[in-house]
Each structure stands twice: as structure tokens, then as C-alpha cells.
Length: 355
Image (spheres, rainbow, N blue to C red):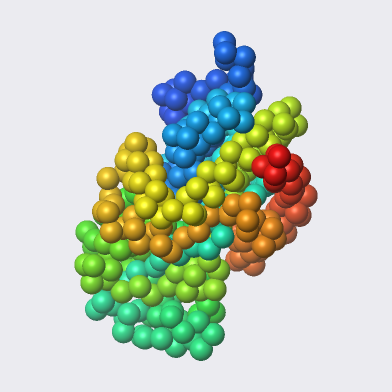
């Protein structure tokens, strides 16, 4: 069932990608404009994982490292992954959509984005049987629910992104599979509205701002990636062609990204300013000053000082393993991830930063 949903979602994503390409004026892969400077088309979503791109722009780090940054916007990871396969962007941060781009389009995973992260949560209504079931798992003391109350429930989320993975992982903690529930697929930005209007029994929220609103409105946090023992780490992917044909530019982009991440990590007030600016300029209005402060307080980026502390791609490997165990993906997707995870770009970027 999940495979069919993923295929249908991919088809919709292609249409979304085509529309996006009409309005972004995307150039060709690695295009050098009249200035003679290489253009890097960075895929982005209007969430925390993409904020370093704002710093690169504002601080002119792209110019410092000899390229010109162009940001290509996407609403979620599914359309973004399909667009990478169609050659519409070169490099950038992505979440669960990476599991589509890596096996299907031979994308390279070159780095992880966050060092630690919270804010991807699952909510139930306070009067629901799920909320009333209480905490029943010794190994996951923050989770709420039971097999009886969750089985048959309708879960709102987006197939192929972090909310889908979160749902699969959550129900598995109670001995259930995604086939034991009804996962209602919708665009990420619509989950909050649908849930508060009465749809669904559970809402998987990948956006901390929307999740915080649900908390304030009395909904019950019953699960989440950190609460389920799998705190999120998004990844930086690069297309196969851009990696092969523009390796030095990949390194320059990564050096600028790590410098931007260090700036964000070192000054939370500056980070909050950049997060607010990026969200606003990329079409979001669903957050408050407090939301941004909370999100910046929970999360830390990988930068030159900590990027070697964790194995690159380990979180994505766990994500794909979850899908394999759920019967939604074949084992060879894991093999593709291992073959396409590489540390060489980061290693060379670190050398450049040391000079």
C-alpha cells in the first residue's frame, strides 16, 4: 500500500516540480553566467534546515568562495527530490525526501545538517482514546497511546517526508504497521488546518511552529522523533552530475555552508534574526517571535567544530531501515545509501577553512 502511495505522490511531485521550474528561472546544471562565476542552484524548503543559505546570501559567503548562490524553493521533500532527478537544482539540504533522491537518482549524501534537533511531533486530541491511553512504554516514557487506541486511527501527514517516517516509527513502537492505520496524505502546510478543523485522529507535524500552536490550543503531544529515540538530522545532497562535473564548486559551497552554520551556532540572537528573515522571505507567516526563539534554542547545526562527532548519513540509514522493515522499500535502497554517502567534500571543505 505504501509503495502505491509513494508512486502516486511522486507523480504529483513531478507536476509540482514543473510548475516550480517555470517560475524560478532555473539555469542549467552548473551554469556559468556572464560574470564567469559558477552558479550553484541550492534546493531549499522554508524550514530550519535551509537557514544557512540565508547567511551565505547576506554575508556574501558565496562570493568569498567563488560562486553565485541561487535558491530554488520547494514546499516539501517529495517534490524537491523529484526535481533533483530532473536536474532542477544542484545541491542543498533535504529531509526524508533524500530517501527518494539517493536510490532513484544516484544523489550523493555529503553531510548532515543538524547536530541535535527537536520539533517534529505527533498530536492527538485531549479527549481521544489515544490520549486517554496514557504512557505505556518503559523504553519510551514520553510516548502516549496503546495498540488498541492507535489501530485503525487516521493519521494526517505527508508521504515521503519526515511526518510519514515519524508515523511509521510511532505505530511500530506499539507493535503495529502503517497498514494498521489510515495515513491520509496531504501537503505539509495543510496538516495543521485539517487537524484543527476536525480531520484525523493524529497529526504528524514537521513544523515546530505549527506544533507549538497545537500545544497552546490544548492538543496532546503523544509522539515525536526525539521522543521516539530518533532525533532528526537532515542531509545535504548533491546531484550525481554536479558532483562529478563541479566537484571543486561542491567543496566551495560546503565551506561556505560550514562557515554560515558556525555563525548561527555562535550567536542565538543572530540566528533568530536569520531564521525570521529566511522564513519570511520564503513565504512563511505561521510563526511568532517566541516560536523562532524556541526553535533556535532546541537546535544546533553541524559546523567545522562538530561535524566529525557523528557518522555521516547514520540518521538517513535509520530512516531507510524503518521503511524497509515496514515493507515500503527494498533492501537495496540501503545499499544505494551506503554507496552514495561520501565524506570527501566535507574533508576538503575543512581543509579550505583551515587555510
